[in-house]
Length: 100
Image 1 (spheres, rainbow, N blue to C red):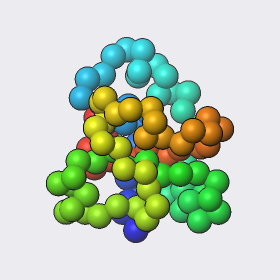
Image 2: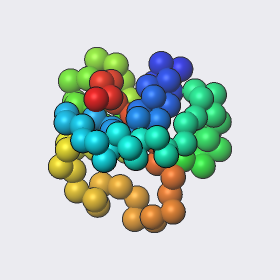
Image 3: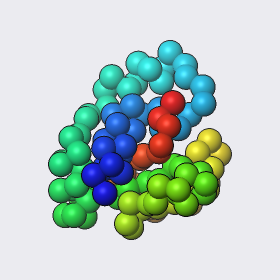
Image 4: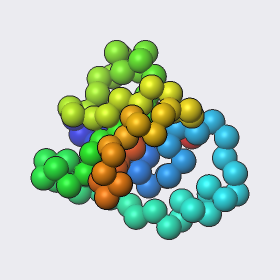
C-alpha cells in the first residue's frame, strides 16, 4: 500500500499524470501544484478528503494492484470527463506507474 501511496504522491506532484508528451506550459503549471507526503496522502484517503485516480494500464493494474477505492481511468490521454466525480470540489490524487 505504501508503494502505491508513494506513486500517488509523486504523480500528484508532477501534474503531468501519465502524459507521453510534455510542453513548457505543463512544466510551468507543475510548479504550482501542492505536494503531499506519502503519509499525508494516506491520511487524506483514510479520512475520505481525497479520491485516488488510477491512470495505469490494465496490464500494470494486474501486475501491481490498485489503491482500494480508486477511480480507474480507461485511457490516460483521452478518458471521458464522466469517469471523474461529478462534484467539481472533489480533491483528486492521480497516480500511475510511470509518471511521464
